[in-house]
Length: 338
Image (cartoon, rainbow, N blue to C red; front, side, top):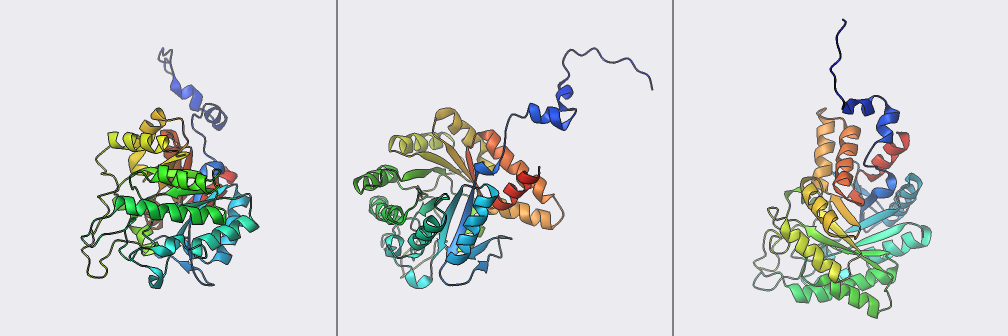
């Protein structure tokens, strides 16, 4: 039907008319190099699927090596390791955390021997090893102790650096731990070991499947009154300015990268940090975020590929340089097909 066109000097749709045009003016790029693959590991010769996280498993070291090789083949340059520790090795002093012959040091050494080009990041926190289930040591009165915990975190970081970790990532949210770990590493000759600080880690409701995967939720032990949550050290979800303060402190103490966790509900925090710092920013698409997309896709509510890639693109658009995501291998494969 004939019509007279509107006289519009500006027509934004002109640049959306074809995939070639859309690609030319695309502001945010997403590729496998932006992804870090978090991997769960456990003792023994067999791997075990994680019911709450479809497609994820607790890996034995042999299968971990296979997944590391798969990561490199897909263009993923880094993995992050999270151990499930047997109850028999969990103690109130969390001493297994710095056992040089423990699961994480052995896994790191195996990866670096077989796959030297793969960047290996290790988690620095006591909750997998602590019979109280907290990221720090717990006093008899039920207080999570800051300074005593920091000393143990330094021992843990040294054990991982000695095994060959490229980067240690303190996720505990104790005050002063970045500076203490940096000093401990430097004095021991590990000045090249980088620190990825969880600068803005929130006391989030989205961590449930992760805690199930590692059996690391807070729990009473030995008759002690143990806090049932981590709100005395993880950040209040209502706060944004506090994240800037935490990030500045960690940067001043020697952090090489900064983490925001979770990612999807905290895009504003990623953006504000991006405006405040020149350090690389990481964001963690956590287990609850991953599980929501997986379960929604299984129910037919969303297209898994489209929803997963859109969620990652949004995190990138907010300002993240790197993203920890359980979608890493799927996303890398999808991006190769695009």
